[in-house]
Image (cartoon, rainbow over all chains, first blue to last red; front, side):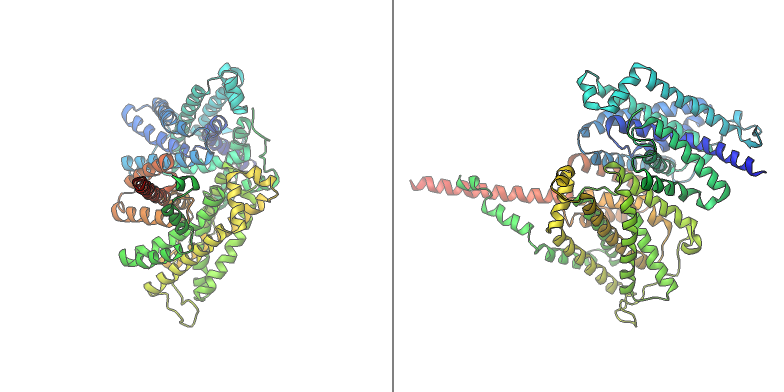
Length: 291
Length: 347
């Protein structure tokens, strides 16, 4: 295979992985933007989504239905956690919310281990997408990867449009920009918080389920994705939606390209990228909070 | 009545003076002396080392408010550092190993601290976590040095000063060394938190903007305590590597950083001894009841932790302290009542 084909393949593989990161990091960044909560339990939502999805798949035999069900169930769980626990700590120092959600992450991960055991679970791509790889220019890409890019692309674009073009999105943006002022002009942020928490948790669950065929499903799946998401929001800026999407894709592509050429460096390299950004542009590549 | 107006009653005053006195160190010494006699020495040693790790973490978190989620980085590199020195230098004296690790960890903490402190608040937690994860991944990459996922074998405990002086292969001797180091760090922390620098730390925690306005270079204050905390955590790591005589990437995993956070909050984050009490409590529970069921332990641990964050943020030691204060106040009130009744009957 030619070098150009290698690079192209690395970029496409990376984009499919990066979009999975974006789904996780987007929820993280929205939740922080609105509630000033760094949701440590976000990784547990990812893991839970993958395992629940597998259970639903056993029950229904339908990949798509299982994905939706996992997203909805975890979304409702996220909403319940916001209502009953996180809400108690609004207005306090962000450290306590971080600690609280860290405890929840342990609890949820423990529940997954109790229910499903510690062994990795197998999750294959749906039969529909297991056909021969798709030729893209000089490269060939598995159908499931192509699907991932298209599907998550549509999903993220939908969220982007909803935030930019709808009244609700305007409220979310106002809340991220300045919570106090938004409340002063009569926005009921408490309901927006519930919605964003549910959407964020649901997206994390969908990402967890969809990453199963790529990464394998283990109780540590979510925390791995969460830590990469932290790197992404440090680079893209917490609360910065555009920055999160772009840096998620960049990190995915950087990882894939490195793993094509220097496999053993692929995991460490993304942290080096973070260190470089901190050194050169500590405020993040895309400036401050907003849009 | 007059005693209430003047402030504390005599019992409360006595208690406050006791709580603030260096005499506490005697209590710590007794605790560390009793630990391997109440519990098996293996568990006692483990608790003392991980307690030292939590103590080092809390010097940063409890006093400056910076929540590091990456202290596994120091414990892990300290353990690898000590183990590599033993394996490659044919067993240099442990005293030299500890000094070398302190210097080495100081350098690592300086570099990671400079970068982690560039962004404030919650970013600090995420960045420190990411740096620890970097070293975790790196331990697989440089498997020629670390043994990769198989871990580093062939580690043993040389004598403390070389030439067979103080044999640390002996479990009692090794525990005594660990306990003395823990006491030393406790004494150091006691002095540090009562120094001008310690007050600057608390000021940074309580209100960073105002502290800056007062002319304190808060960035430098934070960097110094980060480096001290990292060095001490690294020393705990060196002890851990020498104690287990085996190091694997697990020690650099984020869960190790999480342990320091858990032990500290449950034990009491704004207290000197809390992290050790928390380590004792949680490690003993896990070791005794949940050694074979990690899932159930995580569920319980998560629930206990959430409870402490919501309802008992000052931890076990903090709660005990306020209980003691309430008892002292109650004793003072009783005494005030009896004297005033006596005074009335005199009339």
